[in-house]
Image (tube, rainbow, N blue to C red; front, side, top):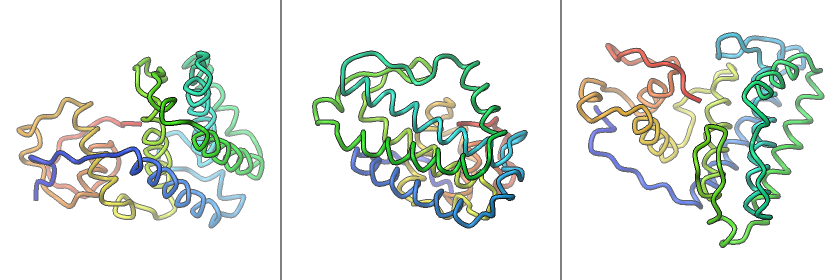
Length: 219
């Protein structure tokens, strides 16, 4: 079935906060199931070990925390100093001890959640600028975090798949990606399959769809 045709899911702020919490719990649980030596193993992202991935997710929490601070104080605070610095930090993270990386991830995730709890309804309406230089309301930050933790829980390569992610999240994710990729209903007309497979295909991840055109990686 072509699930996405004619579908316009609604994503609320409360949904995004819930998904960010659920995604963090899923990723943390997956990490809890790994031995420290497993962190050096390959993730499902080409060229990245699990240490690369964990360093990225930890740094992402801190970067989104910068945007929360911007919304809270009104003082501009960009996610990253530069793309080059972001990439260098991920490579450096991959050389750190696994236990140190895990502690960084847990601390950064907790600090981001606490910072989001502090924002008032008015502050959530403040405009910030993402790493892609796109202006967005601060209220989009929980959604941005939800995408990171859910998708990278799959990328960790421990058996979690898109079928393990909430259906309402997958609908919102698929709708956003198809819009950003500029895919019309006609482009999707021949793409049929279960929602998790369609979402995985749109995100440029491994999928089980037949005759779906190849898409590059996303996120």
